[in-house]
Length: 142
Length: 383
Figure 1 (cartoon, each protein chain N blue to C red):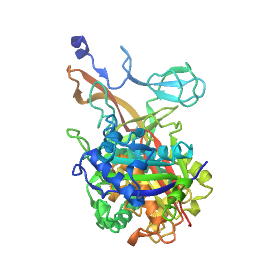
Figure 2 (figure 1 turned 90 degrees about the vertical axis):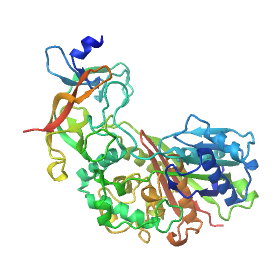
Figure 3 (figure 1 turned 30 degrees about the vertical axis):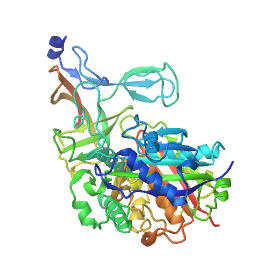
Figure 4 (figure 1 turned 180 degrees about the vertical axis):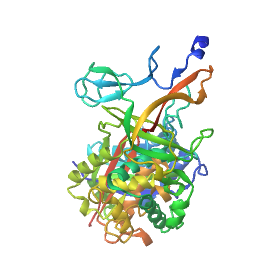
């Protein structure tokens, strides 16, 4: 098992999908009853309580920066500074991640700025079995 | 249903994390101090509600009784993140309100580690911190503050002023961890932890304990304890109603607004009647959000409120006169009773140099991320 999985990178979270021969994407689960969008699978909607109304939906790679923080102190071994960002995706879904390709300076980051989701190797981090991971990041839209 | 009164209450001096005695001895200290405050004995207590987070699975309440008197009373151990102490207090209040007991002890106690709390994602695979943003508490509350900036243009300097104020207040509180002035430049130039929160804008990890003796009106009168008693006018707890960004951005606002609305209704008073507030300033950014959440000012006016000094001692509604979590310290499980101690001390007119003059109503507020919001409104007894 370890041999095959070591060859193909794994998704960093279960709502990041890596289809064979297709582009990576983020998957939401949308309540058909009230429209709430969740990350990850679930059976019951925590907004309206509807059961078995969740439908997998492909989330947009376009969004806007809702808020951020520039993190200067983190846990040992975590490279700083970096920008922790919360992004509202077009069509629904809010995701948290690193905002990259931007100077970590409040004067260079505009709340509400358009961003896009990009998919890359997870900063070289590997698990105990040596597996590589694919993560998602945000970057300013050109 | 009887009104419920705080008849005895006290807290230990908050001290540097890791320097306090064991959690049971620390809890025992505050419990004995609260009993002494009203001249009662452990044998008179009919139940104990104990709040502690770090050893939530280790029967802390029973271990406190093993230090001060094993009388066989029911003990309930509570854990509710940073609302743990308020939860223990509220359970004690409810037990009396329900008519089950007349005298109940509530204890909150915590021994803290150092460093950052929180962290993004756990579980399997690889570490997510610094990869999928940050789950550290300073960053989470920085982002919550930035939401206020986004809506209302609140500045780094305005957030920093919260810390200047609360540290100033603590110079008048001998039970506070720190008694130091921190001018604005010092706060803003302190090590940046997670913009816009510098180190001086993060709550202090401390060891500490607080305890309260609650009584029914009948019992308080019978024991002659009404003179220094404080009436619990409202006790409210909420969890977080669904919000669209819930999954990635803890929401401290909606549950606070819901709790505040219920608390004012229960107490029959409005925000304008409140003379002092101890609110959950776990980070400087958080305090400004709660001015609006608690109705102390209108929407978008929190920045102005800190600028004009309305929430400083001597202002219209002093906030965190104790020094708050930023300077007094934040022992998670004790915080929700320690802030009730602070307000009670003012309502009793015993707060010394930091006394809010003629205080009649005070409000305490805590948020446990995840989330639990606890609000209490307390009233001076005009005996």
